Amino acid sequence: MSGPAPRRRALPMAGAGRPERADAARNRRALVAAARELLADHGADGLTLEAVAARAGTGVGTVYRRFGNLAGLTHAMVDSQEYEFQRNFLEGPPPLGPGAPALDRLHAFADAFVDRLEDQAELLAVAETASADARYRSGAYAAHHAHLVSLVAELRPDADPAYLADALLTPLEAALYVHQRRVRGMPEARIRAGVHGVVDRLARS
Image (cartoon, rainbow, N blue to C red; front, side):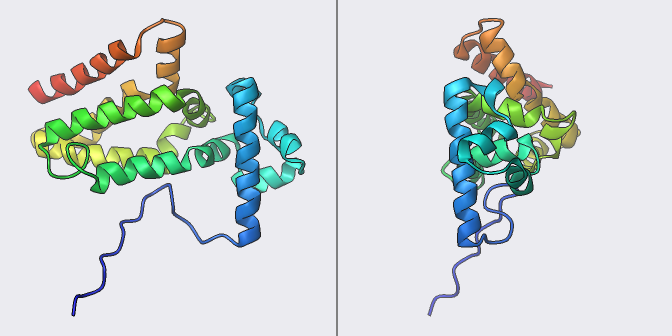
């Protein structure tokens, strides 16, 4: 008889925490839906907890209790995409997932991250700039950093993997991506090539 199925690795951000009551889950989904409507109608500048409460027809205190702050709300809005992203680099097919050389996995991570930024940079930027260290205190950043630390340690055992993991994540900052695309007019392909260049320089150092 076969043994029990392996336990799924818990992700630091998506899917974590205590199970919600059915009514709490419904309220959360309604608030997130209202936030997405506001984002579609008014962009990130129109996304406030007060506006979400008004759109959802509830008190602003309810939104604060549920999400804590705007960063908490925006993370909830990208939770499913973050969960899928983490699942893919932790256990998906190579080269993003296990089974490929470390350098190939770093390039695949960069590609997948730029794909996400192209779709969600404006929303991610709201979450990452809610406070001076909002990006670095998030569960998502911790998961990305830990993943890159393991790949850098494999690729460059002589280096400081924690520092280089931060260095690799720096050009993938959502606010920077928005600035490059909107203000500097950089096409996606140019930014993608630049990030790959950073990865290659790391490998050659």
